[in-house]
Amino acid sequence: MNFKELGLLNELLKAIEEKGYDSPTPIQQLAIPLVLEGTDLMAGAQTGTGKTAGFTLPLLQKLMLNCKHQHKVRALILTPTRELAAQVGENVKTYGKYLPLKSTVIFGGVNINPQINALRKGVEIVIATPGRLLDLTSQQALDLTSVEMLVLDEADRMLDMGFIHDIRKILAILPKNRQNLLFSATFSPEIKNLAASFLKSPKTIEAARHNTPAELVVQRIYPVDNQRKKELLSFLISSNNWKQVLVFARTKHGSNRLAQYLTKEKIPAAAIHGNKSQSARTKALEDFKQGAIRVLVATDIAARGLDINQLPHVINFELPNVPEDYVHRIGRTGRAGNAGEAISLVCIDEHKLLQDIERLLKKKIPSTIIAGYEPDPSIEAQPIPNGQNRRGHQTSFPKRHQHFHGKKPGTSK
Image (cartoon, rainbow, N blue to C red):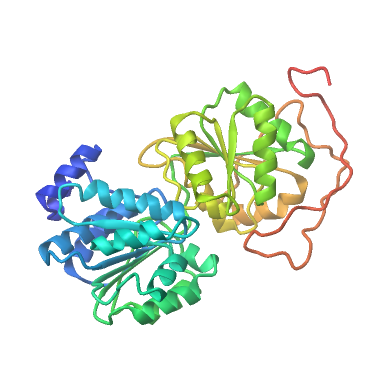
């Protein structure tokens, strides 16, 4: 199947061709016709499946076919993070470049006045994070009374981040007569409850089996003692001469420390997390994409929705506490038909987390011990402290004395 067979406008087909795509992904084949029909949609799509174009293309077409030339907000796309909002905004501009529709992106962490000015000039499409959207509506700077289409993107992450109350406030102020699209990587009971509260007779589609990592991603475990993880990470990147590596750490402070360590090891690195300003996060991501830095160290929330073409390597410096988050992490690579590699550095404390991940995947992940970094067999696992937040906000595992065996390759230590 090609995009023309989906009945898209010539202006959209031209933009798609210039983007270099010739055939739709499975989620696009399923979603685009249903959205064009006007039905509500509950779509299960892993990251990297082309879901953004799956709702952006038909949304643009529907707005054009019923063009009112008034520049009122007619479509609202809600995303959980600033980065994802910016990327969806880029998609809207890219695919809508030959259409007279205007769009703007609004999110927190930056000056609100330019966003107010953009809205005053008139736009048909708003891409927003929930908090800033509510700020603008409370200031009467944003009128949502003409919204015809609502897209809730990455709804599972919205709920994880505590946006459920904001979402319900937004739903309450939108016109009742509208088309609703919900995209989520998982269909948890919470997601199903949310969907039931505002979707009207929705069609349900899933492009891939629930929680299945990309088939093109090669996964591997490297066992190592906790306190030697930094050394092993540096060794792997340097000895393999990897140029673009996304590393996941559990905490904001841990991300900072790891980026600083790698930079001292002559491996240019930067960290992105919730405490970083939007300008700092944007610069770090751009430097990473352009090759100015080799390693981007990120927390789960900061990395959600990152769209980096042909990213070859993802490394779990620490395993996530929630198995589904492992799938989201490694979904950063192996996208759009490109091969990728996902590596996890696993200490003895994380064996239970690894078992949970393998149970979800229904398979064992191959494990390799790197010479010189063998785990000390005398070290016993420390239990994860009681009361830990299951959504990954644990600060660190307890410190304890570690013994080192072997020597780092290339050193006399």
